[in-house]
Image (cartoon, one colour):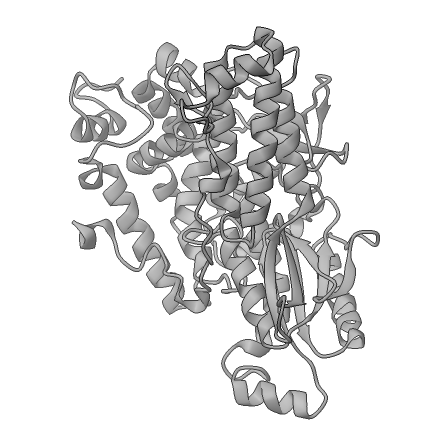
Length: 507
């Protein structure tokens, strides 16, 4: 290492005391004065320039990618991810890097490789996980090596603010400040206003099939720097090491599990957004409420795409024939990207029949006791079955795990699940699930301790006969019935960009 310390070392010293661990999962309070502030200001400038000039192609981005501040922030993002404990094909986890190599040395070596052009990404390690809902199908994940994740994160830090200036408001997946609930709220908003014919689309193996040439062409529309383009292409072509230990070339697709993959996939899918949302833009045929009303009076349809990464629906204020025509248009645009709609899973539905989207069941139905109709958002059957399956696994009668461990894990699963679904119409569902969990735990405890019902009542009732919460060693079983159900408000075009203000403005 050079005398006087490297750029990585100096930046680390500037934000952390000498005796502090280099990475503890979260930045200390003073980080905004160091790398994070520098990166945030860089992103704000890139976003501002990209928004001001839609045709601008950015050169000299490569220096920003291997800048010491960018790599430090990128490593922190990787280390703070839940996948930090998972190794790539080289067998190294983030903890291994911290303990065996040291973060300054690791980032210095990585920066030198990237800067000199000798960096080559390793193949991703394939891992198959079951798809939710108990269908028996699997999803292929590609787990990159830690070094590759850091470079991908650095690329994302530089490229994301540029492409975010081009992304349309109808896209919600894997974008800053946006959530799945925003997409569902948009469906609710337009379904209430007459858009009740739905193209419920399913793209076959979207991440595995998207064309590399189309991806690179879309990236080149904004990026002129050949070294950055070469890095992006290298990750696309890195290959896969299968679970059987066999190497496979990647001629199409971008692996699920890569930090850069959702951004690059969104760049490609923007072609579909632009095709279907163009009439809503300034000067378009649906740009104003007056124009949309005039189209309907003339028998012409209006439509709105709502997309969350590779999951999307097209809402249509018109007829079934209008939806079928849009289905054909959509298939043509996707074919240009190397993608195709699944004939079996893509369907045209009336919102009164209901459809599932992002774990929710959305339906136009009559309110009980009235003649008024509303769009309701319920929890779909699949996530309920998935939750029950996890609870059954943890509370199997033959399980010998200690009570405290089981209750902690049950609480983690239920809190996360309820936090996601608490904006649906679900009070009754949560009550039923709370009963289901209570009975599962009680039956497991009876088997574990060979209790009779008298023992259960002795342990879990108060002197006045009322039931008290199940607890073990200070851990109380979470009660799903206590979750507050609230409506998620539609934010539309008011969702802020994270780069409209820099960290300096918040100081």
